[in-house]
Image (cartoon, rainbow, N blue to C red; front, side, top):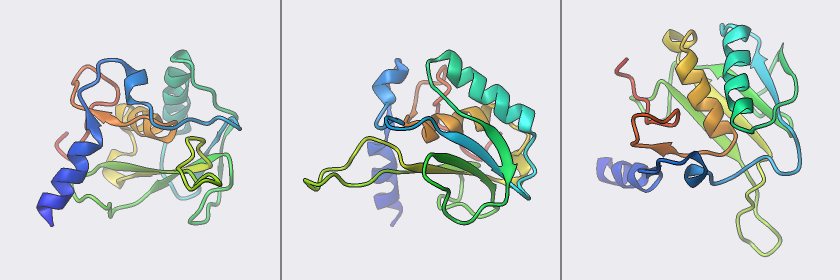
Length: 156
C-alpha cells in the first residue's frame, strides 16, 4: 500500500520551475466564488490575501463569503472546510478539484467545483491557504522549494 501511495504521489508531483507547467485544469466556463464554510475558523483576510496573490498571477475569483456548506460545493465554488482527518496522514491541507468527463469519455479540464480541507492547527497559515487555492485553480505540487506549489507536509 505504501508503495502504491508513493507511486501515485510521485506521478502527481513535478520538478517544474514555471507555474504554467504545473497546470492540469482551469476554471474555463466560470469565475469561482470562494466560500468559507461556517464553522471553519479561518480568517477571511488570509483567504482574501491568498486570492489576491493568485489574482496577481492572472487567476480570477468572484466573491469571497461565509455560509453553511454541504459536503459538495455548488457549481462554480471553491469551498474551504476545516477537517482533522486527511486522506494522506501527513497532509496539513488537501484540495479536491472536480472535473467531469467529456462526451467522448476523456477528462475535461474545466473545473466544476473544488473543496479545500485545512487541518485545525493550520487555519492561520497564509502560505498553506495560498498553496491550497493553487490546487483549487488547477495546479499540481512541485519539488521546487521556491514555488508556492512546493509540497507541504505536516512538518512546519
